[in-house]
Image 1 (cartoon, rainbow, N blue to C red):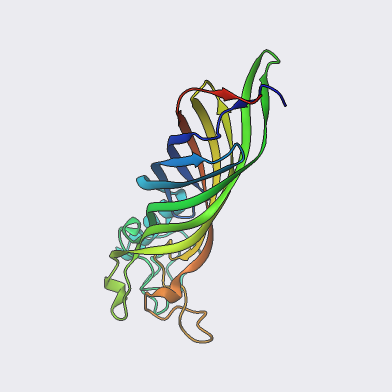
Image 2: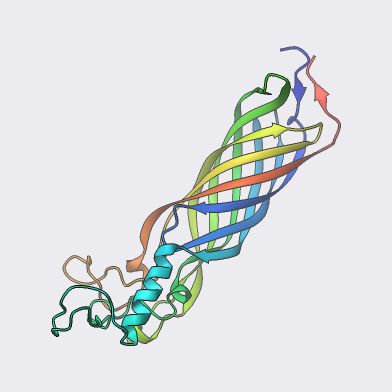
Length: 255
């Protein structure tokens, strides 16, 4: 194609970004960060993406767990059928042997969260063209895929080997996981673009801070301990928006 505008080749890109975790069970996280890329060619780039968890909010499920367990812990009536003690809708104990180490008060203090992410990555840009808006405005657009290793700083419930029903603090660790995804770039000028990006971060962690497993038989039941056995594999996902600036600002074209 003649006179093709070269938005990438030989240019650096700095792109501040904001990302939102998707399909969270217990806590949502909004991450603020950015991407630095060097575009070797129009179809290949190398760079790094990084972000930190700036805002964290509990989900409706977490709020419900907090409400129910708080009421039961302090003896408030809980709606329900006839309880074993003969009281209709009477308080239900949460201090059972297999559950007492799972839920603290407040529940949100034991939840796992993403603190930081640093991800070196390779980007391939196999498709590019123009996007027509109302058949009057045409925007240069490309679609890309990326992948690489990610170093994820996590905050999880701290390990505990005994008396875990009274220990609901958290600790930090780094998980190394693959990251990959795809995105779209919309070029709004010679050196500015708007991007939309989906990213996967699959790894195992204890997002709810529960005593999930480790006990007999076969380690599939709670063991009143909190450790790495309680981590579960999650296909974590992020949806991000970024605003990219490319340098040099001069836009070249093919012959």
